[in-house]
Image (tube, rainbow, N blue to C red; front, side, top):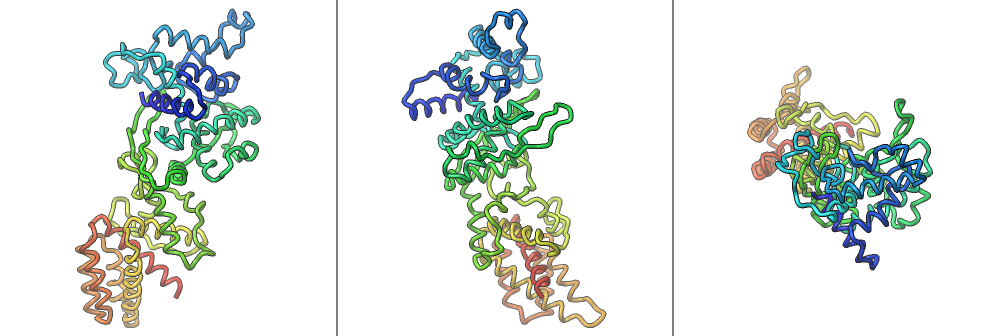
Length: 440
């Protein structure tokens, strides 16, 4: 299981950095157990494990600490060769007829004890985000997560009525939080953890799970120029996996870079890093994983398709964008940044602006009571494909020869771009048109 791989990888990293030679079981006993389980408030949950089940009265009456009884019970299960998701984290159910047995045809596999304990270590590094879990095979990321474990223990010990066993959610929060600070050791007393409302059923609150995009932004701050691989999955009563996903962190950096290029003269009002990182996306984590890579495409802003021409792309609605609130200007900026980053050609912004100006000029030729040219302008902006756009822009050229060069250039560029890019360009033109009309 990949949890074991990550556990072994971190164990080597830990031993190298700390000058030790711990086995997986020794690390579990000496490091993981004291932090995670030697307290009534556990930091992690493994479904079905005897480690989390009740203790008989006869054991309690013996005077032994309950956490140590549970530890001995886990060790016994492992030594007795009990192999299932309750001992070997992420593995199939103990019985092949169970729903979580997956595609395993035989549970009589050769799995040594080190592999089993390594799986517990590896699961401790799972990053919880809305929609699933993510294991990241990068030393820098693993070490950052490891530094957060002790702060989670401190937080959960000092916070009344807080839900326990949220290490994965904490890891996601810690990754986001720590990448915003340079001195990790100073964070312990200054962590503002996002906590949800108290549950009426349990009477406790829980740490809020981070959006997946914030996690990716955090990763890009640590490894801005690297393409990394993450293993995406879900562990619950029904385990599932999304597989190994490439995360293209240089693409993430383009959001910041385009912001600086496009709004260089608007430093007072331009989007901050924080505002960019608050981006709400069209794709949830599962659908982003289904793209096979997480890069700029997965960052498509939520609701952008509302303003794309109907028929140009799935779910496009053809609405007109309105500059009615301060928030609308923020949306305009984020839409513009993402589209230009996707088109990967800043010159297209100038061309879209020129087409928007030409269409506004065309509309002024309407005679009183008639909207012939306004209708043609609308048809150009509502074009759902390249063929339709060229037909409409040709009609506009006949009516407005003074903008011949602008129309020629746009047709030339449209014919060179991939057809998938056209909906983005025409939407950019629609935004520029609305913005110019608003300013005038």
